[in-house]
Amino acid sequence: MKQDLDALMTERQLDALMVVKEGHDPNMPISYLTGGASLGRALLIKRRGSDPVLICGAFEREEAAKCGLETHIFGEFDPAGIREAAKDDPVKMQALLWHRLFDEYGVTGCVGFYGSSNPAQSFHVLTMLTQMRGDFEVAIEPDTDIFLAAARTKDADELARLIDVGRRTSAVVGETLDFLKGHAVKNQTLTWADGAPLCIGDVKRFVRARLLEHDLEDSEGMIFAQGASAGVPHSAGEDGDPVRLGAPIVFDLFPREIGGGYFHDMTRTWCLGHAPDAVQEAYEHVMEAFNAVRPAFKVGAKCAAYQEMVCDVFERHGHQTIRQDETILEGYIHSLGHGIGLNIHEAPRFSHRAPDDIIEIGNVFTVEPGLYYPDRGFGVRIEDSVYVDADGAVKSLTDFPKDLVIPVS
Image (cartoon, rainbow, N blue to C red; front, side):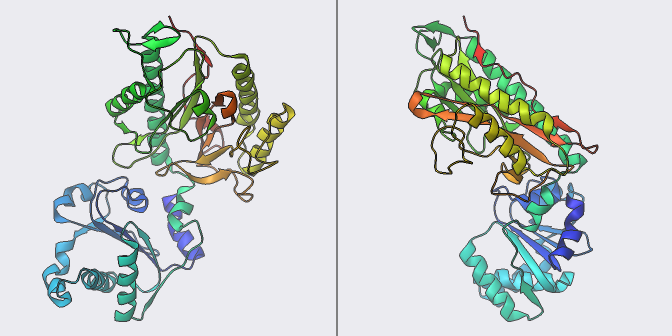
């Protein structure tokens, strides 16, 4: 949680943090600390034991002020003087600005740098800055940086937003199902009123429009994959393929709040009209795995143990699993789940590759067992997102039925 940052800074021996944002691309640390303020170019400085300070452009000062942090604009730090001293060299201008900000806010010691910028330019800026002053060093952190470590648990305000995004996402999935059921059927294919086939690309366009109506965006690209494409976990589906009865559809929707906010992640597998026997059987095995782990989650338990439970179920039914062979291309070929928040993939991880991850109060994560058989023309995945409340209860963020067969006219 955000309140853990000072403790994490102490643990990692960090004296200060500096976050750089360039343009309007989503920037996890800035969004995390400002509550999602819509900013272009910005800098954020936090010393251990002190509140963060935000510096932004003059045009965005009102937007920045909404976040409640101490806020300043770049114009307060003599940009004309910096430009003249740097002779318009952009690298030197940035180094001189940072030098001035370090003086202004007393930044010394071990400093962590984060955010979005040109890597090569940042390297040269930091090199020049270290030449200007000898009172700081650039921190080298482990794979999980301090913001990702803090974000693995969510506070009450974050949970409220995640719950709301889950509600809106589930509503869009319901509207999509009604859209599909509202089409006529001809030659085992859904059609428009003029008899033209309804294609996967048509469905995606409908979904994107509905997401916008709910103040959500398809920033990462949804999955609406049918038949053999559904047998490849991250196949987005073929936009030109008509939507067919009996062909399994994996619909994985993971939108976020517009502008770079919190994500939701859910998947349903549908067969319109009827399901082939092999798909029905695989679906029953997936639901058995889902129902085995879903009530078993407990605070303090190792996340990898639940991946083992799912592998046990699938192997008992004769499916290959990633536990047996990491190179397999069919069967159960991925981990059980992952954390979500301002990133679509966060900690904790429910994988044998993350043996030390445990379930904690404030975690938000997915539960998504699946079976994949592209050569047999199908895949099945069922996914809900859940959260661990303050009492340790694991509750669902995804409120939508898990029916496989969808009746159509």
